[in-house]
Image (tube, rainbow over all chains, first blue to last red; front, side, top):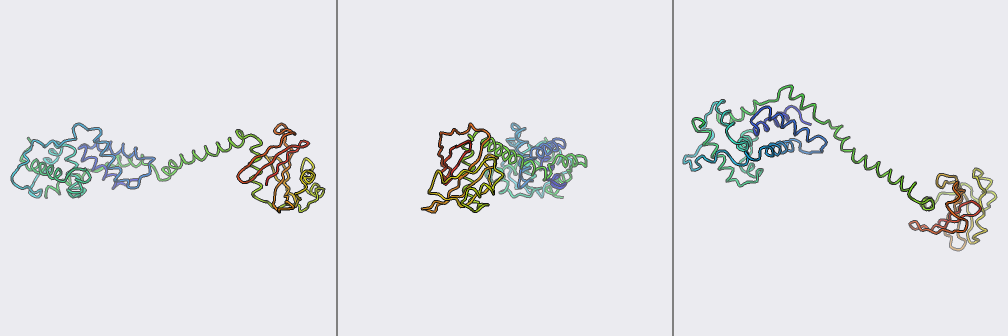
Length: 147
Length: 183
């Protein structure tokens, strides 16, 4: 069903949601087991959707809203991702702070290379919501140290 | 490196271990197994349908209904006679495996003439079918004769009439032999 490349693709997506190696593996494992016996056309897309649903079902309370709502949305200067310089350890630390749906958002933009419009359509929210979340994330990652 | 590149690399470096890959590969269903699993409900359904039809035909349907259905189906097949004769003596001599003598139908209905006869079976028992032609209309009918093991399925006094599809069936018993006329 899935070769090594596809299994790693699912694992990375799962990792972006869970932010933990063991949880990511368990989620992929559970998803593949649940797919057995079903006739599925686009297996990778189905598996990702299944991983996402399973994850958010387990973490309903802490995943609905972004954890960065306290950040100043009216940040005056326009921030570009290109300008943000961050060490690997700092990136890891900050990824563990943000909510799963924000990690997923960044993963979809930078790894899956979806456009903001595509992300908005997939999440069924207005594009403005996505842009606002991205803006908050830029501010968060630009800050000099994690508070 | 830009933030995007750092982010991308951070996740691209996340890989399943060889042990994890093996575990995930092992739990994946092969295409053959998936095909078999998908076929299972269809197979169970087909077997159930066969069992229901078999039970209905052999245990629920009354013997006379089963005879009517079998005869109506046989009549429509319009099989050619093995012995082409209207002489019942020749028929009896030719079809000598029957456990009863073929009765002359002309004694009952003079308007129909025999064209020939052949072996057949009714409820698994050897029988004879005689092709008859109406002298006036030219319409073909088939007369079946057989001796049932269970003599209680039809009394000598009764004439049973049934219609199966477009075929009308008349059934009666005389001297232990069941006659079935399909037309």
